[in-house]
Image (cartoon, rainbow, N blue to C red; front, side):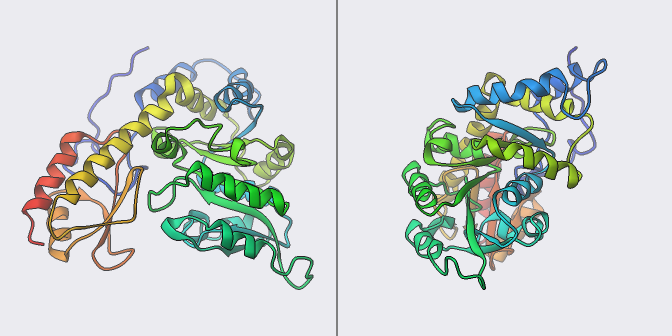
Length: 357
């Protein structure tokens, strides 16, 4: 069965979206897979044949035995992981600008019955391993104080930077030395893999990571995230927590089919490579324009820059949609995705060049 793509009311709007990578549609390969697997009956709640195969397929991708748990949102993936990895009196150590600290509406605390998030600063939105070591040893055994239990890193970060493999391993060494679990929020995992030119294994379990929230929704999927467990002993508890939290999908095959297509033929990486390439094109164009300042050393599909209010208004008037002033006056965040067109980036740069800055 072939998909006939028609122009929807959304698709015909004369706007160019750089608001986020979750504004894009769905990769045709994933849509095709969904249609094919929508025919006939299938055992519910993840007991269908395709769902049961995902552990093996993801183990091949990560070059080691893993257990996987599918959920529909990144918030659920992060929160369920952290709840299973920490006791209620524990603490999750994370960067102040991490997604779990700023954009989950308290879900990690809610899912875990009150686990506390403690922030560890560091340049470029990345945890400083030395500061992490200091915090990991503070008030250990003090019954009056929450006890460090998990370190969570965001890869790629909220500003588009990436932890190097050495930085990830350094944090992994701290976790191992202080008996801490290691979680990675990988909503933009594929973008980080492309930026580093490494393998999924090198960026996760080989660096000491115990659990990964493997993002797909921002990179071409309809709506699915994968909890990838390198510490497979966590699977049973997370499955019970998933059901209790209302995230066990009865028609699980429609999550599984998305991931099956996503990891087939390197779709996950190809989509991220395109998004990153469009962001590089955008950064190169902006860097040549006087009066517009690039912010943060981004290596993935997120670009922060600072421009005048007149420039922001002009770009919006020309149909370019992006967030501005949320992170400071004149600060704009531009996010590319798997469907961003090179000609749209060229048009953005043309308008930006001609604007009153």
